[in-house]
Length: 345
Ligand SMILES: [Zn+2]
Image (cartoon, rainbow, N blue to C red):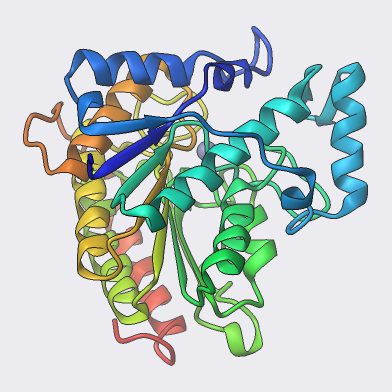
């Protein structure tokens, strides 16, 4: 048996929000083709997922919201200003969610790293959503695994350039989930949330971790911050499963945001996360997340796979100097201060 698995369905490529929309439908197919060309795919067993059932969606979302998406999907329409709802999107979003659930389940059938190339819809909250997301597959997978395997400690590492506001809303009061998000500062980017002082409520204080980064942050500052925050928290929390939203819209060529990460940053980040999984639970669920420059995105995903596998054949490009490294250091220090009662950092 192979050690790792990818969940893939041809219909993943139907998650397409229109020709003028940044979310390009054929990304899963292109990712698979590139992995095949680079001889990475052969290290993964490929599974075809089933759609999430409506009962699965309802473990996280309100029934009125699920009905609303279903209605929109019948006629076509808009979920929000930035998120068109094309006909049939209910089925496609349910399939994407089923992909993440299947990937989660495979970790308990002996696989160490599993990947859903159409996952990580972190803007979907219980009763509303925007940001190209319909159902929060991260949370639905957590609830599925929690029930099926009686788990108590989930670690989310969300490196997408946008703050995962939906996931945060769902777990802000829940100390069984550490939700760690690195993102561009909400004062300069959608969705506007994810302040450093938002750390979770009451007995779940310390379990929401936000590092907002200023525009122009490069890979060197980012990696250093990741090493100082994400590594110790994950080691101290000792998760039973790690869910890694490995969005690559923080790449300097991405059209939607202003961070300046390079290809090699993704290699090092994914390597860190894979090492954390090895040290703790040996169960790493990877959801490829955002990325809107189609070429940079596929290459960045490739480097994530290299990092996950420890494959030295990763892509490199010239590093971009940080616009304001001092500000990153200050924010990291502020975050450490806010978290000092909960973690040793
Ligand atoms: Zn994003």
